[in-house]
Image (cartoon, rainbow, N blue to C red; front, side, top):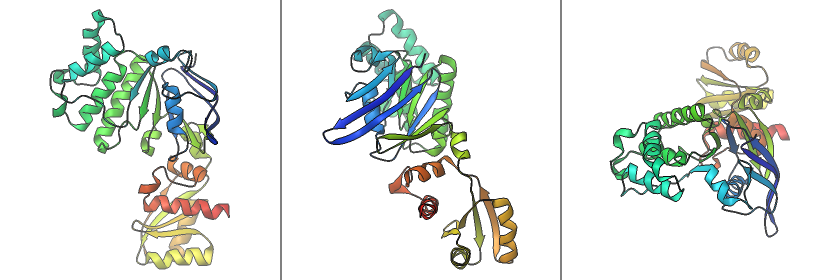
Length: 324
């Protein structure tokens, strides 16, 4: 049985149609990514699924329970890791988990063992009686994970779970999460702005303007892009980029990282570059399409438009030119 079932889900805010009949499902043990630009419908979807917002039509089931008619059973079936910190830092780790267990009506006889096990899973058992205010950002996030699984949910909602953490801490958090799903069969629904985290997902749905525009494994989504991106460092990046654009009609952009060129077959194009610009090329690199490329092709913008890198801007330029 699917642990999450969403079928033709719609949500209207007056004349605004925020969700236009989206459908997807999540199986036990699956990590499912929901990606989309700001205003695409991600937050509305999540709020409906966690019973904070009522749907306009369609159906949404969590662990077999309807999100509107059986909201209490739904809440018992899910855990939530919020984007913003939500721990009481004046309490110890153990006390935070204790109050959570009481809120979720964990049987009194099981509370102690559940807390011990949850802290062990995230490697915080030695800090059980430390005040949370003394924890690092990564430790606080791990404690929130422990709290989210304390009542043994069937699905864990992860809303930007590692935002603001350094890459090493992010990697450790995902080690804990992956271990959890392997040991317990816990399903996860993830929203993230980090494309490397989206690559971890078993399947990804990209949502834009209230509609799911594609859904597949990350590998299959990337297969649909049949171009390579070549980056070259040269003695005159601006001049070479201009020549490739003006004389060859190629998508070439000069950035701080060098000249980036989108071509259909990088392996055959690289020898042509060296033959044409002999002595001017210092280094060359070839990339296969990434999940970020898929996202930009389908939505026309980066996952973090406001923090787009020069590489993101290059990819958008490629997409816009190819649509003309």
